[in-house]
Image (cartoon, rainbow, N blue to C red; front, side, top):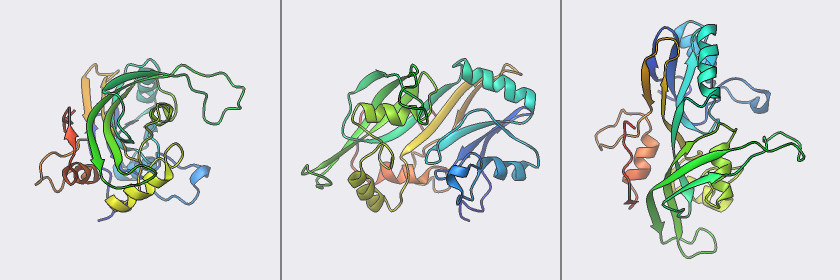
Length: 255
């Protein structure tokens, strides 16, 4: 069954909210900017559950992973407040060009993508930790070999495209990022891996459910076992298993 027809995987559901795994390439909701797209999380989930759903945060079209929706208006207001007050803690995994520092915090203000050039910038801060490195003796661009790394990203603010833009700012753009990345690397890795996607994954989301007070850890895990054939995120599992990564900090599949 393809992603076009399969139901979305539900990671958590209670009477107020539902968390799903968003596949890479799906939009959260309809937009005129992608008029040809046919895969929308909100419409699919509405039909799947037989009830309205309300967005409370967003993931880019190319990003996979944990996406949270409210199931009624009161829950939507409460959950939006959680995100606005930075009480939802997000953890992402990205494959980036080059080898960044082992750990660093990028405190670099950003102007909204669609804002005029004279618009004020907004504070933006992301912490990064390098998880693994890989070097292949292939001259993708002007160097005799190509280097990539896996990094963990934790945004401390919630600006649009923040992780992608901060990684570009430190000269380690995400592989598959058509806007902020490097075309030669994107094309080579798309051919190497047999697919074209943004290699950014929303691994986990930790928050206190505002209406029940329950502490939640919502995870879209990257499988670690070779026999985990039916698990989510098989593209990430293939990437990790079939290349000679030098691992510094293993990815906890359950975050």
